[in-house]
Image 1 (cartoon, rainbow, N blue to C red):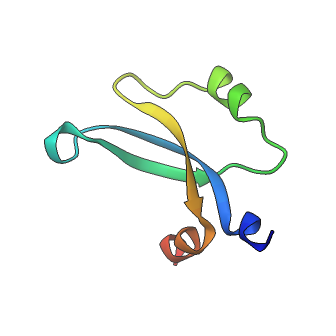
Image 2 (cartoon, helix red, strand yellow; image 1 turned 120 degrees about the vertical axis):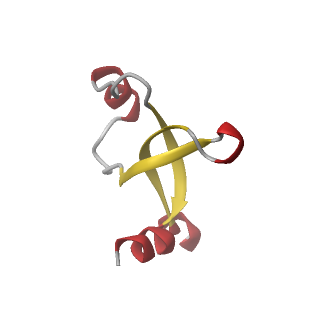
Amino acid sequence: PEEFGQFALCDVVGRPGGPGGAWQGEHLREVGDAERPLLLQELWKPKAGWSRRFEIRRRQDLDRDRD
């Protein structure tokens, strides 16, 4: 379907600190097609106090954030 290419898996690093202590992303990057998310998670750990999660984002939103 055409919608398939409209979304991207993103690796997001952040920490609590948003309104009400909500998790807030600080660094976001698109995961490449050849990358393996579970291997990324196992091999690379964020600094103490930070955490990572994977999020699905619309590509159009990523392009807008890059400008």
